[in-house]
Image (cartoon, rainbow, N blue to C red; front, top):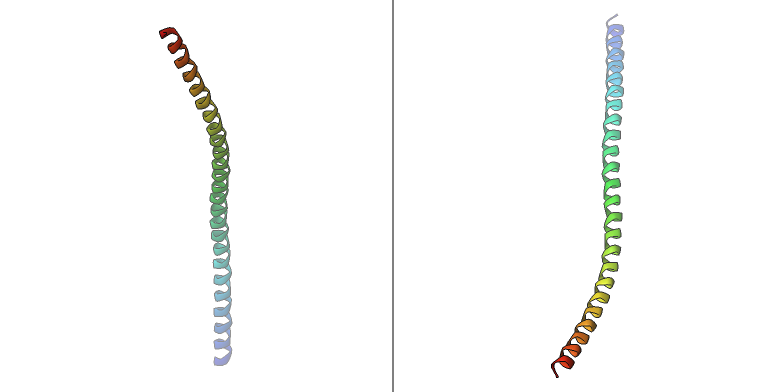
Length: 90
């Protein structure tokens, strides 16, 4: 009879241990899923920022070309103005 009681206590202890393990496993899976979701959201933001930066770089490159053209045109205009001033001064 003492052996039967100790076996029953051991089985009950195992069942309690398994139930606790299963409960904690579900909590850990939920925490892990939440963590992965937040990491994925942050990565999506980073990727979005990266594409925005690439777009800005392209826009700036276009502005650089336009500025060069404006500077060239301005230099030509200054040369023409200087010629006109020299002709009027003569």
